[in-house]
Structure formats: C-alpha cells, structure tokens
Amino acid sequence: MLHTDITADENMTVKYIEERIDKEIQKYLLKNPFIVADDILKVIQIIDTDGAFILSSLVWQSENGKTEYFDTHIEAKNKDRLIRRNLSKRKIVYFLYNRETVAGFPYEIYYFSRNMEHVLHDKAEDLTDDEKENLAFDIADQYTDQPEKFLEYLYDDGFHVCGTYKDTWEFIMDGNHSLNRYCNVAVFFEQLGIGLEKSIEN
Image (tube, rainbow, N blue to C red; front, side, top):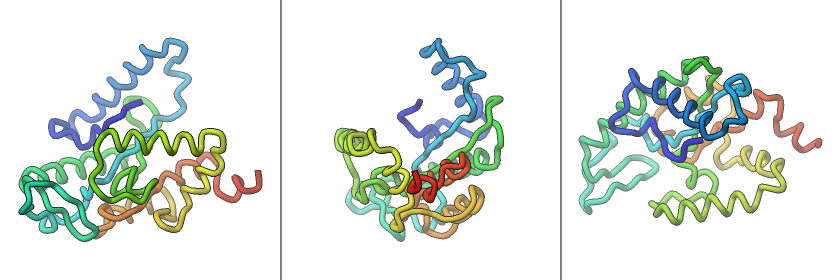
C-alpha cells in the first residue's frame, strides 16, 4: 500500500512506472511474509486526478505565489513546471489505464477527482497534510463497521461517474472534468459483483 501518488512524481516516466509498481509490490510482500504473490488477485491503484487532463492553456501563472485549483483552471506557482507535471502524469495514467496487467499481475487504476478530500469531504481548498490525515481518520471511523454504507456513498450523485471502466476514464479525460468532483471507484466493486443494489439488499 502506497500513501503517495507515484503518477505525479516529477521523476517518473512511462518507461519506468511498471518497474516502480513492481518494486512497491515486492516491498509489500517482504513486509508481509504471510502473503505470497499467488495470493494477490489484482493490483488496484487509486490516484488523484489533480486536473492533469485539462488543456495546458488552462494552467495560468499565479499572481499570489501559490498553486490553486479551480473548477475551470489552475493558477500555478510555477506555470511551466505544472504543465510539465500534467503532461507527464497524463501519459503515465493513459498507459496504465490501457494495461490489463502490470508487473505480472492483473491491474486496474481508479481515481478521485480532483482528489480524495474533494470527493469524500467536498473540500476543494488546499489542505495541510495533518488536515488530510484527520479527514482520512474521520472516514475510517465513520465506515469501518458499516462498509455497505461506504459503498452507498460512492454512488452519491454529487460525484459518482456512471458507466464501464473505460467509460469513466474517457469521461474524466474530457474537458475540465479532472478539475471537478468525480470518482469511479464504485466501478471496482461493480466488477467484483458488489454493486449498489446488492449492497442495499444485503
């Protein structure tokens, strides 16, 4: 399990992303010797979109020295650097989204847009690491004992993206969607046969 988005790493490229994922899997297996590779049914990666799929013309130079995200554009502390980040991230994500296997394992990638806090807490403003951690604990406290309620929440009309795995990725890559509040994680559960209707019935 990673607590960082390696697709946004400035030093990461399409050429090396699969090798990096493989290294993380091997590290996880070393830390958890009771788990072997054959126990892994599928590798799931969840990323923040961070507005990576918008046009470069919608990344503006900030006048206040901060990077801020809006529903229609990004104002960047360093415009050129953020454009390079976006170009790199979208190439990596497009590569991964089109892969059925990575590092020898079945693989899928899902997203929170613009980020996890935006989706799960409807907080679009910039947050400190401590604030993000506290929000993550809040979600865990709220849903640990009632996972079916969390699944229901993933279908919230405020952010749920309908459609197939492919449909939801084509949607988020279009226009300004990667700046807005959207999430396709529910598709993962649907592909396991655990959809909203089954959750409610149970």
